[in-house]
Image 1: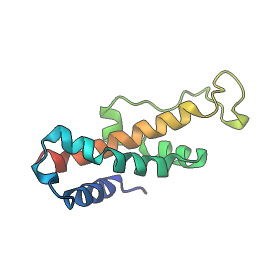
Image 2: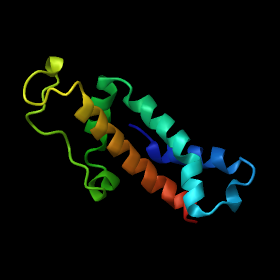
Image 3: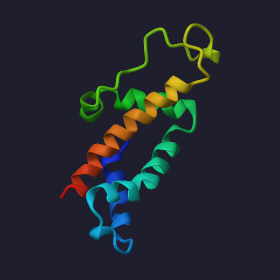
Image 4: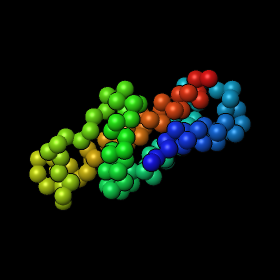
Length: 114
């Protein structure tokens, strides 16, 4: 089981150690942590098997549902990416990234908007 909420806490804790971070306004804090958040998402989604596992785990997460991110279409074919949804895995990766981002954003908002 992934612990994206814990990852968000670590991202925020690391950012808070940077000089001047606490003095930034909310928008600047979001910008400051964007690279760290993106690095976590890239790590989770850099291979298709990771994307598949991530989607399977997160598709029922309340933050993913609240963000309106849907599961892959039933006719999406990953086997050699043939058929009507052959897109070199773009939809798979985009879906996994969006789901992970929704969970991280919700968890980070709790820290940033304190």
